[in-house]
Length: 303
Length: 125
Image 1 (spheres, rainbow over the protein chains, first blue to last red):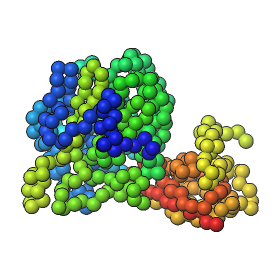
Image 2 (spheres, each protein chain N blue to C red):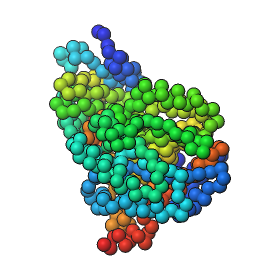
Image 3 (tube, rainbow over the protein chains, first blue to last red):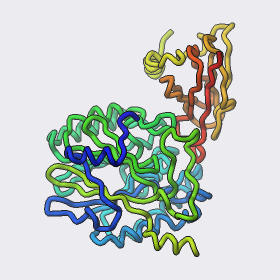
Image 4 (cartoon, helix red, strand yellow):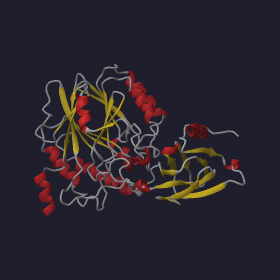
C-alpha cells in the first residue's frame, strides 16, 4: 500500500517519463501519432451476475460496447482482463455464460479482441471451460514493436502462477532487450495490494522480480473493480474499473462488499480505459471512459 | 519428524510472522495433550466460528477442517496461511503476543460467496 499513488502524484510521475492521464472524452489523448497506437482495456464484466449492486447487469456490458464502438478513433485492439463471467458451481451454466459473453463481445466493431480469464471464469475448473472458448490462458503477442505478455494468476484457485509459468515468463523475457517496450496483462495484482481482501498473487513477488530488469514495462490488471495506480520500483501497475459493480478502496470498510448502486448516477464507478502506447519508449497514456455518456445514463434511469 | 516441501515452506513463512502473534504449523501428532484447541470449520462460504477470541500470552492450536471443498486460511498480518483440505485436519499453533484484532480470510477461491468468507481474531489482555 505504501507505493499507492493518486492521480495528482501520478501526473508528477508523468513528467519523469511514466504515464499521462487524460479526460474520458472520446478521442482525447487517443489521437495517436505515427509512433503511437492505442488499445482499449475492458475488465470484470461478470456476465451472469444478478443483484442490487447493478440493476442493469444484463445491459451494462452491452452499453459499454456501444460506447467503445462509438469512439471517434477505433483502437488497434481490445483486451478483456478477466472475470468475463460471474462464477457458478454448475459447469453447464459456466459454459452458457461464457457462450453468451462471447456472443455479446462479438458486437465490438474492432475484430482484434483478446481475452484472459479471471478467477470467476477459471478457478473452479482450472480454466477447463475457459480454454474451450478462448484457448490458452497465457500467451504473448507483438504489435507495432511493443511486446505484450498475458499471464495467468487465476486458474490456480490459490492465486499462484506456479513455477512452470514463471519459467515460461522468464524465458519469454529473455528474448527481449532490457529497453524493449513491454506491456504485461494480469487479472489479479502481481503485487500485494491488500492481501486481507485477497488482492494479491501468492507468488507475484517472483514475477515482479523477473519484470524489474526491463526499463520500459507497464502492467495492466483488473480484479479490484476500481482505478488504481501503484509503482513497484520503476514499474507502473494500473487497475481498471469494472463493468458490473465497483468495490471499495482497500481497507476503507470492514467488508469488501460491492458499493451500492446510485440511482441518481447510474453506472457510477464503472467504466473502461483507453491506453495509448508510444512504440519507441513504451510510455503509456491512460484515458478513463464512463460506460455511457451522462445524457444516456439519465435516459436509462428514466426507463 | 519429516516435513513435506509444503510444510517446510509454511514453517519458513511462520518464521517471518510479525510480533503480533507467533504461529507455527504443527503436524497432527505434535499437539500436546494440555494445549487448548480451537476447532474451526470451513464451509461454503463461512468459517465457524468466524470470530475467535484469544488471550495474550496463551498459546492455542487452531484446528481447521472442512467437509466441503479445498479452502485456505490466511491471516496476512501474521504472515501465516494454511491449506484446508477436505477430510484432513490442519493445525496451526499460535501464541498471541499483542492485544488487538487480526483479519483472516479464505484465500483459495471456492465459489460465488468466496469473497465474503472471512473472520477476525481478537486478542484480549
